[in-house]
Amino acid sequence: MKLFYHLGRYFILLGKVFSKPEKTGMYYRKTMDEINSLGINSMWIVVIISVFVGAVITIQTDYNIESPLLPRYLIGVAVRDMLFLEFSCTMVALILAGKVGSSISSELGTMRITEQIDALEIMGINSASYLILPKVIAAVFFFPFLTILSLVVGMVGGFMVAILTDITNPQEFIYGLQYVFYPHYFTYSLKKMVVFAFIITSISAYHGYYAEGSSLEVGKASTRAVVHSSIAILMFNLILTKLILQ
Image (cartoon, rainbow, N blue to C red):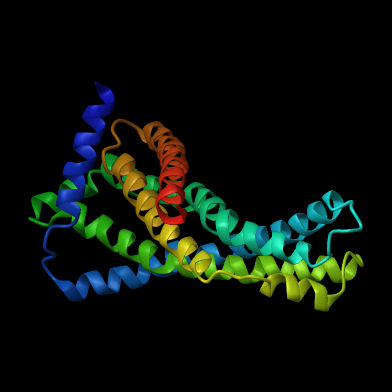
């Protein structure tokens, strides 16, 4: 029963979030600020993790290709497909759920327990739309660019470790990256990230917006936001994979 209670309150909150804004110009400025806060400030962690993951995939693929009959360009194929199909969308989304989700929940939770949200409501402002909608728009717009960044950096990381460790030569690795490439892999990653961006921001905002009690509850709300966002991402990853790749 508690699940249905939270689901109902979650969808009611979304109804308030997507109601007509009072002043479009104000929302535009807040959305630009959120792009910087949620998106641009997350680029460094995406770059660092992606370059090392690309390198690790290259080394592990080389380790598992024991047969001399298998061409070395398959290392490039494995790096490309693992980045496109899973890591640069799903794994990056899980990382962002930890970084961005906890930040959103903490911010809104602090505003709730310090009665700043109540003050906005008293002034006649739709606090849910004013505080949450710019975050959702910013994430849905910018997170796909983080996916593209992860793809590029991951392949560069794989290429660099392949060359530096003599796993394969540059021509074979690049040929593997280009071998039988399906363009819908790219759109598949971006579509999933758009859904994941909405999940991260909306679920995290829900937990922060309805935080109650002391500052200790803000930390608990942030933890719940990360856990529930991650579970939702994994669940929708399965659903979207079945729907898009079938």
